[in-house]
Length: 357
Image (cartoon, rainbow, N blue to C red; front, side):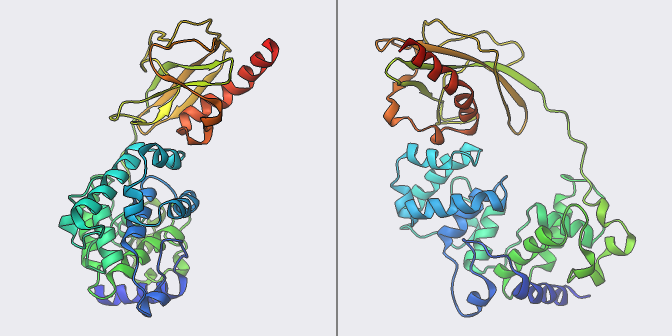
């Protein structure tokens, strides 16, 4: 099957089977001339990095409700955006989201640039995201390769080189297939194909629009692809997290450094993380050990934080961080790691306050 015929077959399939998403302009509307909003495309692509479509839907709707335009987002307070991002993880994305919005407003008049090269210069936008925005928002012939597309290409061409070494080869195959006509719809179609038919397990080859020319299907290797290099075991790091509450209900929080994990986020004070870190409480107090541990997994390691609790005087002065009044404290705005700590600590602290009451 010629590349042009294969692309046409996929687009025909997409016209009937395209997934409905709050940020997507479907093929029928697109055919009627409705253009995707570049702000919607960009926002969804940043949210979807390392996150599932199901998890992103409500976050996307909530962001658009609060910040309907890139200009509105650019004018938002950092803390508000970080709070709204809580639960999506990878907070560097949220920081870059704000930086990018502000650059688009300050340097591009609030309009996203259409060219791949210019998009690449924006904060937080790499080759994949630039390609996705250029193709989907501006219908440019750009190659868009995510995990779904890698899997489809590995099977279509029966590529047994393991990922990530196979990335360049799979991208070449994807580029050759990308058509000049409807490249934005095509980019979304091949991602939908991987997400709904050419799935990691039990691919539905019998209803695939590319089944006739799929080399892995003919070879009987589809379920084994793509190959991946063995993953190294994640190390475990340890530390302490300190949850202190004043008798008036105020909670001690500190903002983490801009760079690094959870950068710029408010959270409970913690010690250093490592194999055997020393305790490092943020203020002198009668710290209680409830024998509870906060467990969380980051991309490259598992983290276990021993919980320490304290009820302190309303006049307590911490060495780092500051107390946030109970009425202003929103646990939902905390990053997931810190919400886990709060969920463990809250019942015990409430009990102590009530008992002292």
